[in-house]
Length: 181
Image 1 (cartoon, rainbow, N blue to C red):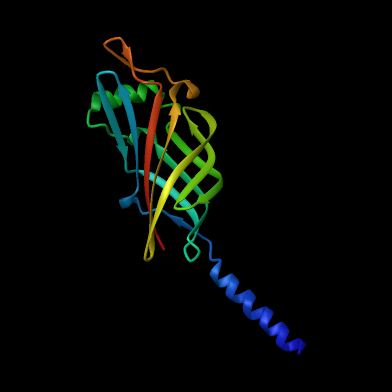
Image 2 (image 1 turned 30 degrees about the horizontal axis):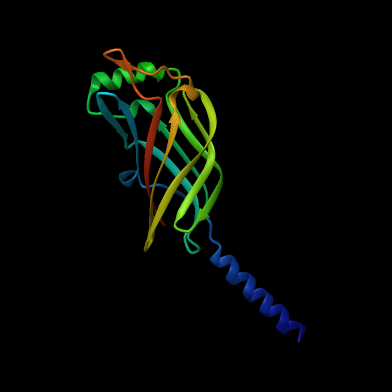
């Protein structure tokens, strides 16, 4: 009887370990990007970078994320206007602070949404933020779309002006990442 009980415990343990298969997966660069959304009283500007290093610890079987990290070279953002992009690089001191990064400290899953809380480092300053996202699980991949907002003043970035009117203090970001397992 003891042997049967021990055998059952072993089989259940192996089955649970097989199900809990957390893997660190690098996002597919062809399906990953970060876009900033900047608002000026006279127009809106979007700048996109497809040079994003994004990885996550994922259990595909359970459809669970346990961590995420994202890094981007700020000089890779393209707004479609090279003069504007050059000025933006000056404003954010891209020579001194070439990278923006996020590393999660906690991920909460509520319904169809993920909330990744962690530290964002931008312009040499680190603050805690939460990124809200929605995963779309399909076969052997998951596409994640999310976003967050920062205040330029929190990161000591002087707001650029056009015609003596500064851009809004709020800077929104959209993130799309594709993970294949």
